Length: 488
Ligand code: UTP
Image (cartoon, rainbow, N blue to C red):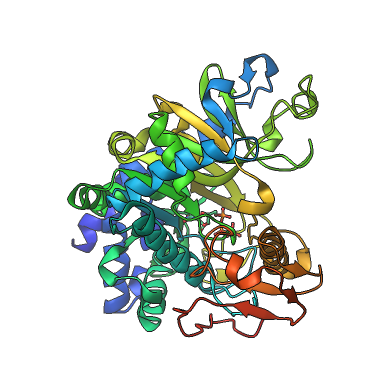
C-alpha cells in the first residue's frame, strides 16, 4: 500500500495519527507499521471500540428479582455424591478418553501481570519438592489419565492437549515443551494455537502508538478462544481427530484435574453442551463471579454486580443462595464450540481503564501513572447463555482449586499458597491411604503415580512420613524439569 493510500485508508476511519511520525521512520520501520495497520480491519476495530463503550455505559442493574440460582436439575456436587455415582460418571469419562474423544483446552495466553512473571505462566515453578512447573504437572496428569483409562477400559486412547497461547507466549511455550521432550507426551498430541490481539485505545477511540512504528495492542482476553478456534483451524482439528469433549481451564490452577473423567462423564450423561465447574464461595464477600441465571439465561455475575442482600442471602439449610463460585474451569462439546464460533463476533466486550504506555505528540514514549485509555477483553464464560443444556458441577475447593494470580507479597492466590494447598491435599491422600504424616511435613505425590489419590496404598500404608521435603515418585518418573524460575 502506498503512503497516500495508507493515509486515505486511515483518515476514513479516524486513525490517521498513526502515521504522524512517518517522515522520521526508516524503511524497515515504515514496513512494520504499514503491515500492522493493514492487518487490522479498521471498520471492525472502530466498531469494537464503540460496542465496548456502549456496553460499559449500560448501568449494571442490581435487580435481584431477575437473579436465580442454578436449578437443582442442572447442578450436582461431587462432595455430596455417593461413591457409586462418582464411579459411574468416571467410567463414562474413561470410555470417552479411551475412544480418543477428549481434548483439553488450556488458556495460556495471559500476561501474568499481577504475578509479575516475564514468561508464560505455565513455566512457573512454585518450589515443590520435585521442582516441577505447572506445565509439567499438567502434562503428567494427562499421561496418568491415559494410563488409567487404558487399564479401566482395555483400550489405549489419546487425550489431545490444545494450548492457547498469545503472540508473546506461543514461541517460548513451544520451545519449553520441546526442550523438555514434551514431558513424555507425544508431540503430535499437542496443538499450539494463538489467540488474537486487540488495539489499545485512548478514551476517544484513537489507537495508541506503542512506538513510532508499532501499534499498542493486548491479547483479546480468554474469550478470544472462540475466534482463535475458528481462525487457527482448531475446529477442523477436532473433526480430524474425532474430539467431541473439551475441558477448558486456566493455566494457573495448580490443583486442576486436567481432562477430568468425572466432569466428562457427568456432562455426557446429562447431554450437556456447556458446563462450569464451581466451588462454593468461602464467604458472602469473596470477590469471585457467581454462576447463576439472569432472566432465564445462565451467566457469570461478577461480585461487584451482586447487591449485598443477594451476596448474603441464604437457603433454609444455611448455604449461600448464590454460592456457585466460577473458577475458569469449563466443559464444552465440540458441537457447541462449532456453533459459538459462528457468531463469536457478537459476544460481549469488556472494557477496562488501564495505564497504557504510548508515544506522545512530540514523539516521546510516556508511561502514565494514571489510567489513560482502555483495553478490551472477551471472557470465556460469556457463551454460557447460548448453551442449550448448561449444567454445573460443584467440586471441593481443597481438592480442585488453588490459583496463582499474585506475587507472594500479596499472600493470597500466590505461588506459596498454591504450593501449600497442593502439599496439604497430598497429605490428605496419604492419610486416606493409611499413611501417617504431620502437618509440617512436605511430601509431594507425583502425578505420574496418582491423579487423584489412587494407586498409593502400597507405598504409604502404615508408613510414617518424617523426611521433608520428599517426592513420592512413580517408577516411570521423568527427569526433573526446572522452570525458568527454579530458584524458588
Ligand atoms: P487472568 O485473567 O487471571 O490473567 O487469566 P493472567 O494473564 O493470568 O494474569 P493478569 O490478569 O495479567 O495478572 C485467567 C486465565 O486466562 C488466561 C490466562 O493465561 C489464565 O490461564 N488468559 C487470560 C488467556 O489465555 N488470554 C488472555 O488474553 C487473558
